[in-house]
Length: 85
Image (tube, rainbow, N blue to C red; front, side, top):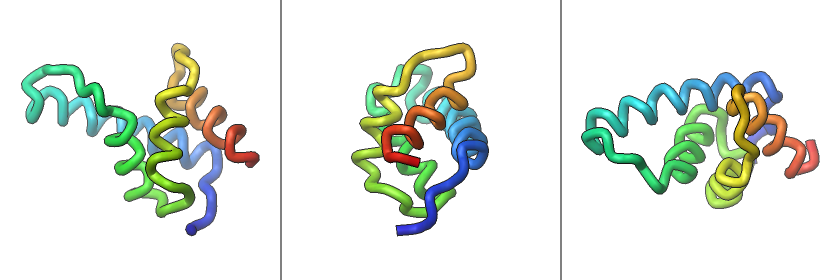
């Protein structure tokens, strides 16, 4: 396992994942909503930040993260809190 990222590192990477996933949905899925987005985000985040947790756990935490106007910040806080950081 790699070192757990800081809240800011995770937030920035979730923002980048959102941008990349939006393009993926637009170009490859032709605008269709990707119902498997949590796994996509988890793979992206772990690819950028290293394997600091299992992909399946990260995907489930991202899916469970509360909705908010600043989702990446809220999700980063939620994920780190849930894993005890």
